[in-house]
Length: 123
Image (cartoon, rainbow, N blue to C red; front, side, top):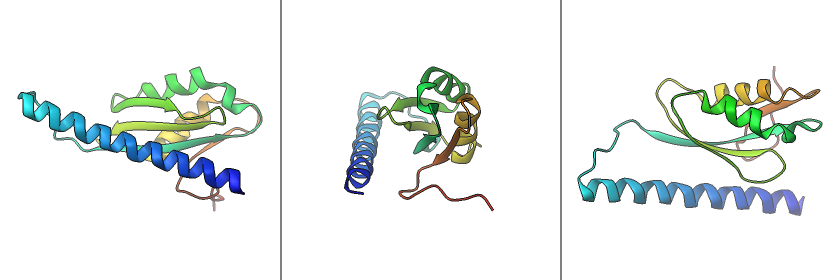
């Protein structure tokens, strides 16, 4: 349980750091006179689970980058934790998770949006 908490805290720290980095990039662009997109940018952590599913990194990254709104795909660890930065123009986090699950075509693979707890069973 302690290891899970440490991984979760690490992911949240990484997400916070990336958020601060994005804000700094926007401030730098504004100060230099560059045009800054008014579209909101969001980040989400997608988890991939199942037997050997985390080994399909290339396929998952390719599937997520097919969305024009996706700006960054970063695997945070070797256990299937992915940070995705995207413009929120008509794309939902659940869509990103579904695309990751389809791309990780191993037996019993699943993907979900990490909301800080265990995956929720579908009803």
